[in-house]
Image 1 (cartoon, rainbow, N blue to C red):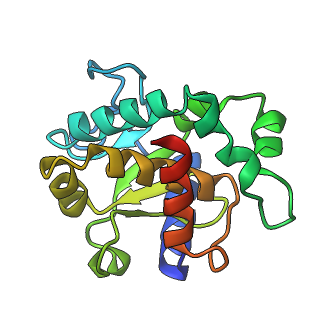
Image 2 (image 1 turned 90 degrees about the vertical axis):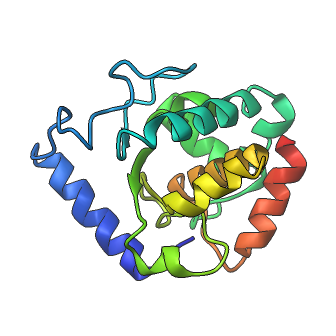
Length: 183
C-alpha cells in the first residue's frame, strides 16, 4: 500500500541506512542472516528478534512460490509508473524474483498509522525497497493458519518495491491476481 507517511518514513530510513548509521549488530535490528533458520539468508530483516523467525518462515514460503513459472508471470502482468513490465526492472538488475526478494528491507511498521487501517498486514511506497510489517496482524494471520495469505502479501509488497503503483489497480485486485498466479 502506498501513502505519504510510508514514503516519508521509508525515505528517511533509507537515507539513515545509506549514511552507515544502522548497525547490524544492534539487538533488535540484527540481520536475519545472523544464525537465522530458513532457505534464504534474508539479510535485510530488521525486526525484534522474537519476530524474525516468523517473517523468515513467511519469506521462505514466498520464495518457494516464486519458484513456480506461473507465479513468476506476475512480473510480466504488472507494470511500473512508466508502463514497463516489472520483469524489465528485474532484468535491469540482473535478478530473479527470488533473488530480488532478498534485497527487500523489512522493518516493523506497527507504530505507523497505516498499520491501524483494517486489513493491512504490510505496506511500502511505490519503488521503495523498504516494506513495513504490521507485526501483530501479520502474526495473527500466520497463527490462524493463513501462511499462504501472508506469503502472497509479501509478494504483493515486493511488486510495489519494483515500481507497481496502486489505484489502479486496487490493493485487492493486486492481491487477488497474485493469489491466482501463486497459489
